[in-house]
Image (tube, rainbow, N blue to C red; front, side, top):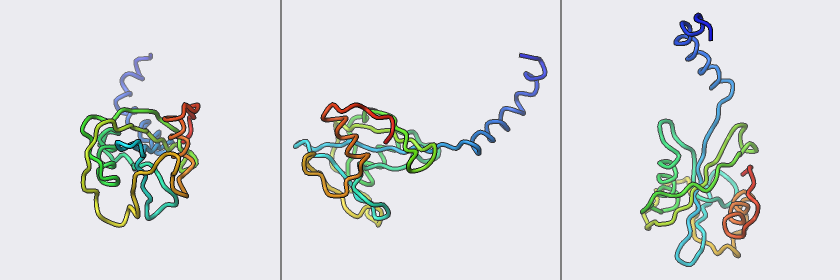
Length: 157
């Protein structure tokens, strides 16, 4: 590397990183795969989006993905992690937003927790995998087939 680049790097690197973030922003969401003692899966129906989804949401500034999924599971699903959830996979969600990604976590040990009250979640419940509610999203169905039926893992949500 040339000497001039080393000297200018402390000034240029922040500029280039800022440009990169503006030019190619990325978003990260998290979803939780949570089953009860009967093997039923927890799904939520948001008031602002169609369909039934695995609980989850966006990773906030300064928050880890693990912290976000623990928070979202408590807020949306009424589930408090007793042990750290396990990362299952990382998926592109470009149909939702260019450069959007979702990290999927599985909760092994949890306890019931009072979910946040408000207008975000219209309904929540545990459903048998062979009796999912009408409107369960294709991405949710794909993740369940991968996790429980051995379906090939897709890169896209």
